[in-house]
Image 1 (cartoon, rainbow, N blue to C red):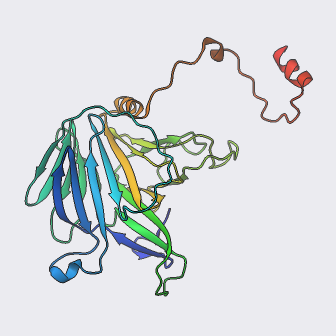
Image 2: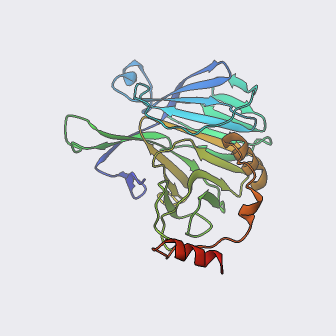
Image 3: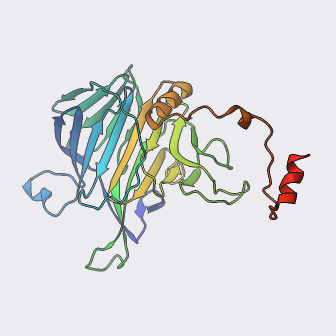
Length: 301
């Protein structure tokens, strides 16, 4: 979903609070919790009348880091949720003066603790940055139903984050699609619809993408996830969901095959189909009369 008009201007119907500064980091049991302010905090007065986002990092499986971003934890959870399969992990957590680090296997998340700067980097085992949530990346947007000038701030809440792309980085995936194989430049909405193969609609949407830099991102939300793949900003993939919480997993395999293997281990692998299903398939997409005579005629061809 696009929240801006061009690179700098927010659309007038939205009010956005972006993560601006990490003001607190604490290590809990196998998790790292970050409190981010949505404006620079230079003194006591800066903590008044300002929004905050809570960011929790955890490790559901080796080489996977789960990011949960919450604006308002009291919202009713209506579900449903994706079922994922975790394994026991032992992440390494370090909190220093300038950064908080969460390491899980060959994948590390590093959050800067600096005045007026928010940055969450994801690094491989060699210390190379794979992608980052940076300036005006993570945030909460409010679509103001009462209008931007109203004193009553009511509306529809969206949570979003955007992860940076390197020069020449290409994006693949997001389920069954009938558009270009490389998804850069596309907007993709996760909502199953029968639009036919000559449309942007698809039957099997999956909120997971991979890039040629050896990692993937899975947005754990079964609602209408909206992806802006180098479309709103050409150097980022933005994803947004309605509500007050966003959960996504950064999955590092080092190459597409290993990343996909980690993804299916997390989300579950299907059983082998029965032998008869590998035989001849017939399509009746353009047949509207499915009486016994018609069906039998296809079988006896």
